Length: 106
Image (cartoon, rainbow, N blue to C red; front, top):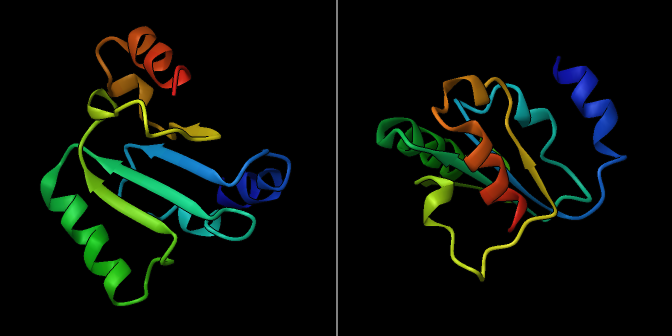
């Protein structure tokens, strides 16, 4: 799946991405490359977010990938992204329609 997404990544416009439910970065590690300048990796789980932050500090994840322990509900009007990714995540969100509508407005 990562190969398929990586091949399509060049067709996605913009340079900023928000990944909701980033996991441990296995799939999207392949996608964090130019022209992406900022990749926000959101995790509602504090322990996994800390793991991602440690991997970024040691260079296992690209510096452009910013892990955060939070959800899209905490986004303010100043946070805008060209693309939002949900890879194997929407089925775990109770109200996925509201979630997609909220992110569509950023």
